[in-house]
Length: 124
Image (tube, rainbow, N blue to C red; front, side):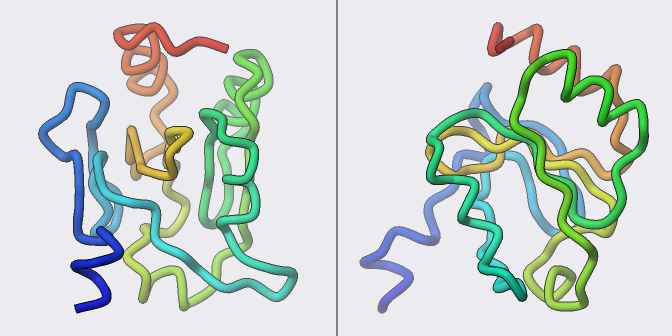
């Protein structure tokens, strides 16, 4: 009942603002909450901005893209609880200001990320 009333089950997988899959998380899904030693992965969402999350290790090319595009970039050290939450190890998630995943990309493919961002005109 909690999931129904809190609207956690709502997703936007069929939206033009949603693409890709990494782990069991699809573009359009709400970002899963993961507790961490120093807080949780929802703390960065307080900025209400487009941002990039990597759960595991980010490739240098992705770091460069994030820096050049000025997206807030967060790299979380991999924990088994991330897999339990549905994240793919070393996957990138472009998060919308409302906390939903816009793009899930298992390979950190910068060209696909650039294409997606350019199509939506969400450049920083």
